Image (tube, rainbow, N blue to C red; front, side, top):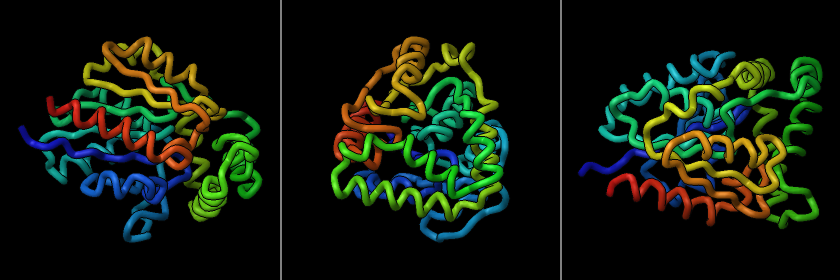
Length: 244
C-alpha cells in the first residue's frame, strides 16, 4: 500500500511556519501557505486571501490534485480544520483521513474581535494571542517565547487577509452536516482552549461516525506549539493507522 501524504493547513491569520514544531516529526509532509499569507519556506505571498472557507477549500484541493498524491490525510488547525471538514464532505478520491485540531463545526467570532481586526490590528492580534495560549502563569519560558513569536508572525500577515480569514470563520457552519464525514477522523483539542473550547471538539466527535477524541491537558488553542511532543505522537499514531 502506498504511503499516506500528510497535508498541514494553518489557521486564520497564520502561515505555514506555524507548524515548525512538526517539521522534524513529519519531514515529508506538505505545509501549505494559504493565499495571501506571508510565510512558508519561500516566505512569499501567493495572491489574495479569501473571505469564505469554501474558497480556501477550492485552493487546497487544486494544490493537492496538482501534487498528485495517491492518499492524503489532512490536518487542519482552527480555520484549517474548517477547510478540512469542507473537503471531507466533498469526498475527494484521494482523501483517506482528517485530523481536526482546535476547531469546530461552527466558528463564530467575537464581534469585538471582528471590529478590532478592522480598526486596530495590533490590538486585535493581542486579543487573539491572549485567548490562544494557556494562561501566562502556566507557560514555560519556551512556551512564552512561542507565544511572542506567534504575535510577531501574525502581525506580518496583512490586516485585510486576517480580517478576511476571521470573516470566513464567522460565516462557517457545518453543524448539520458533519455527520456525513465518512473518513477516519481524529479530533484534537487543548483542555484550556478559549478560542475553540473542548465542547467544539466533543461535538465533532459525537457527530462524526467512528471518530476519535484527544484532549491535551494544560494546552490552549495553540497546542501544536504548546505541547508538540504529545501532539506529534497522537498525530503520528493516527496517520500510521490509516495504512492498516
